[in-house]
Image (tube, rainbow, N blue to C red; front, top):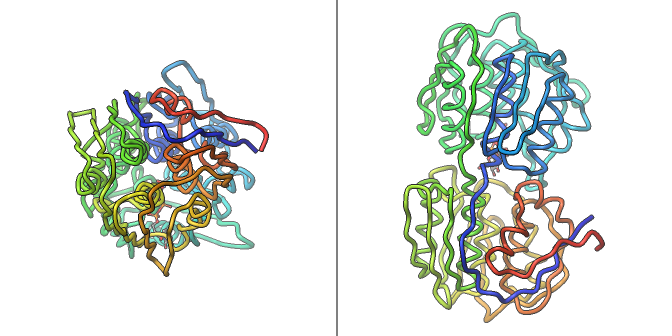
Length: 418
Ligand code: UD1
């Protein structure tokens, strides 16, 4: 187990380049199965989750070639439709492979996915969508076997705009007979990126970004090269790092439209923010003003930024209230943050954050990906030394986090010993 050792209290300044989006890269990597050929991807973040996804594609029989700026994936050789249980357990997004395997081979076998412990995270909506498309789902002892003679386009009405279920429904229907209409679909930018990727491959998907997506089945897909969009949660994390340290930074390769709710809240708190088409500049005040936030499906405030925002407002003037509406168990980091002098109380879905003068370095442990990133944000701002343990969670989703932070003036190192 590795740790970050952070000597805090530095005001962050300078430029940082945002990596490709984790949540976009993962479904697109899964979707490469559909063309039964070569796909060249640019801007895939080199993080543990994408490495795991490539490992699964290789275990299924695919070939992966990593070059400096690109990854070439050949799925023509895929000859297995069973996702290995030990790999399935390591990552929630492995479930997205089911839709792609079913789409191409009309069958897939998998177990319940793993991932961060931030709530119960069922997959009932994914399975219901498959069943709507005429795919038989047999569950026994935690294993799901999905099979269909034929996949025929249908209307799929999601009970909740689940990101993963929307993506799986799209992937399973791209090569189906006829039209599929997905209503109450998730509207996240990562779904637009998946649509753009699939359409470049020759698919006929439209409506992503709205709450109705139409997929007209095509017979086959072609080889393609594609550039993954920037990571909006990494962008939000660096904006918050500037905000809590009273810093002044420029984000490059960032899409300001994707972080609109984050920008709005930081402006309300007193930050000056300017944007260009792929850049965001932030200048933070000495002290932020408290704000209230409710997490919602896109275009609302993202749940993945909840812990990072809660941390940023620990030292704001006044009391902030954060309501978590998406995952029921996403306040585990609060106990760790309070060890650093934060005054946060959790009542049901709400965290009440009473602003303190400053945070102090302490020894803390990451409990999940974004909760772990929040502790790094706290450590960078705190007085004294912070040791963040269990950073494997953080490495799942942030590329070169320590290196990028050092580039902005932070004092952070990785230690292999706790
Ligand atoms: C994706 C993101 C994750 C983000 C989340 C919400 C990826 C790889 N991960 O996760 O970072 O936090 O969207 O923006 O893109 N639900 C069900 N049944 C289901 C599926 C979901 O009840 O079958 C519930 C979940 O428990 C949760 C809510 O729906 O309460 C949202 O989950 P969902 O949108 O599916 O999130 P993920 O796709 O897992």
